[in-house]
Image 1 (spheres, rainbow, N blue to C red):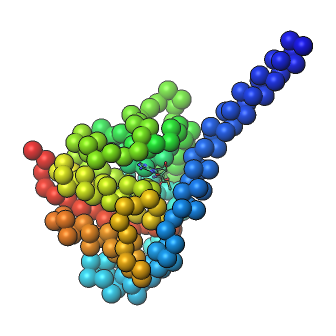
Image 2 (cartoon, rainbow, N blue to C red; image 1 turned 90 degrees about the vertical axis):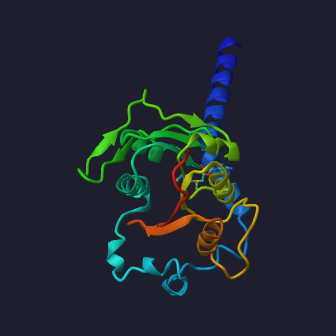
Length: 240
Ligand SMILES: C[S@@+](CC[C@H](N)C(=O)[O-])C[C@H]1O[C@@H](n2cnc3c(N)ncnc32)[C@H](O)[C@@H]1O
């Protein structure tokens, strides 16, 4: 009887851990299902980029430039940020496991992940310069707020970054304006956003216009990985 109870308790514990491990993926799938229909299907073609006064410069004449896999996006964005800014206080909003924040922390930034789903850092990543796999020690940490982004969180940061983040792009732009932060957005799908582009307008194109309307100086950029690789760098000026 005692052994059976023991086995049952172990099985219950195992099932609970397996459920927790699966949670972010499940949550993402649910979120994808709630994505707004009619906006995802506006393809971000070279033609559309060319027609946009702000994005035309991103059309690549040589597609072979985009060689890296999507999984290297964190390393590439960290490199981009390091070459464009001096380290400061950065929030990696919707940062998932936190690899971008970890890499920024290693480059001298005070980095914090803001994401409602608690997740651990990955065990390793590839260093793109040396080509070597780098282990992340089990005791290494990046500060995390396991909460949905709230505008007042912006007060603590100089830079808000969101790569493929859900549900917080518009909130981040408005918060950056209110609290005097700069912004880097690599938007993907339109999920849980309070306002939407009109039908037929691509989400990224529309966000660029929204950010410019708010008075930010905008520098769109494109990273060398396959997938949604367009970034919007929006600057407000120095924080007091
Ligand atoms: C597609 S994942 C991207 C994760 C990571 N940035 C990456 O590139 O792999 C979207 C992330 O947004 C997070 N998220 C969803 N709603 C959010 C919110 N309101 N505030 C902050 N993060 C949110 C999800 O938990 C998820 O980790």
